[in-house]
Length: 61
Image (cartoon, rainbow, N blue to C red; front, top):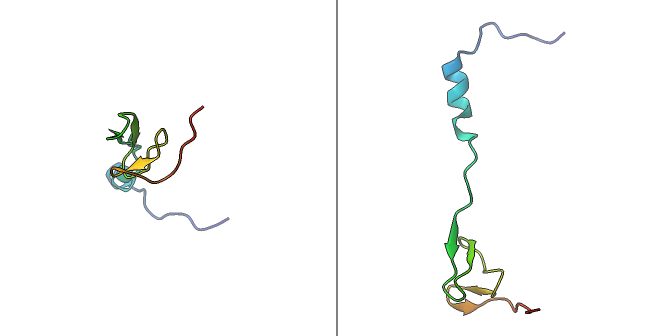
């Protein structure tokens, strides 16, 4: 059997350690070219534009 803790970890200490574990929703912004919702700082998947210029060619169809 391995070593055991000498003292119980208090609930406050445990909860402070877990304070950064919360999930946060992804932030969506509106594309300036096609007005579709996209992730921040990413190329728009529907039109292929980022910061007002075409980065990738997107096939329609």
